[in-house]
Amino acid sequence: MATDEAILHFEKKLTPKVPKGTAGVIANWIVELNVIFVISKPRQTKLGDFRPGHNGKAPRISVNGDLHPYSFLITTIHEFAHLGCYLKHGREAAPHGKEWKGIYTNMLKLFVDQGVFPSDLTKSLQLHISRPKASSCSCPILSRALAEYDAEEGEFLGTLAPNDQFEFRGERYQYTLLRRTRVLCRRMADGKQYLISSRAKVNPLVTIS
Image (cartoon, rainbow, N blue to C red; front, top):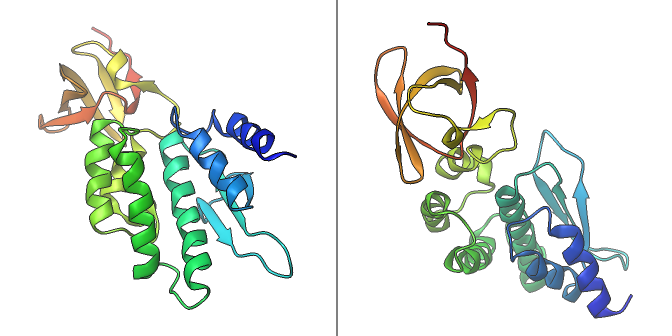
């Protein structure tokens, strides 16, 4: 397959999986670095992985196909950073050592600076970049931010109306007021108020008057 055709092939394959405007970049990485890129079935133990090439075989990267586009992109960057670290340092560098962290943060920052992510997630990513972890799951701030975009059952909080009640992460709340991209909500158990992303998936509750 010619280079241009290969890039278009991967771009088409990746477009439904990643944020708008990023598929072409990843497709170029795959082709230029001669990587076997696999969109994997869901795995409980990991979001993605990298395996260096050996015995003449190309390096391999896999990313879970059930991830939300933002998680898919971050995981893909994470694994390509492993590839970049391996190509530059071989097996001498620690898997998530300073060499990998430098490459990973530089790659991730390019997408953050281009405005690929929404503002609430961008703030979490900026903190994550300052102290990158072995995975997005091991960074509490980023993990919580990404959880609001997971493809779980329910409706987006922003589609509800004031006074509607809903369940979110095992707690019952009442929709109070929309504030730009977040909703002021009252927790039913104690009346405390919280700001929750309007894109958070919640389970609406039917109230009987």
